[in-house]
Image (tube, rainbow, N blue to C red):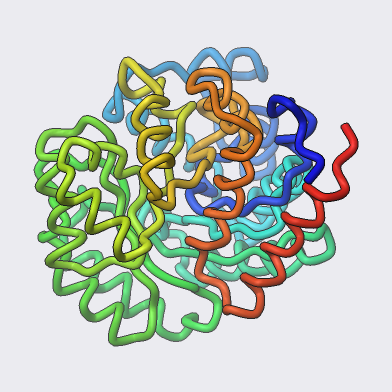
Length: 342
């Protein structure tokens, strides 16, 4: 192996990796937001990139969501969704991403009168076109947990005609008083439909450990998004490790919604054999795409090059690809490491 003595930014960026925790609506960069507003005749309070950037200010999950959802008003047509996802895939390719499972929030759009089909078809076209950029891209439909379970159930049924375009389902948005159990029946139905399951267990929320217990024991998810607070319960850590479940950690965004990026905890889980992965969450808002998240974690936690390679391999191990594709992606990581001469 030709690993660098320490994981340089160049090594980290070029390392083949999967991204498993990425909200497409969270990739709305200021310039595209302004372009879509002009295209759709929407008047914004901001007129320059700098003014949009200045509006992306928050210090908690709730204050982030208060900025995040209104920004989506500029997404109106199928072409808008295509353009948003295409811009992300291009950026991801530059960060060494070869496989991505992208979250999208249909209720945030259908509640504004945007047809479900326009959302899914726009995003899916971009996912298909990602192959030309060397990115194998797929979609995960997320339910908004601060909407009703009935709304989630209706959204799930609306997805059935598009099931060939959707890899799995997730749960995101404001976790306060919206535990996983609220959506137990919806996720049981999603499993019946053949979808893979994941749920957000955001960091440092009220009831974090109970929510993690619910997703493990009651819902039976295939992966956990965030989930870093599991370190507080060694028994649950062992469950996650034994099941080989991936945790989709997002260091940079952690540092915006709490006082710490949880670098120590992420490294602790990594070294305990848990399949932690590194992802960018909502990079347009938090200022760091996936390679930047790797670099930030390396610098904060003092990770070795070997540990960075393990993170990249974890991202494919925790992904929802076929065994054959997983073997191919892992071989690409090995080939990169063997041939690295930085």
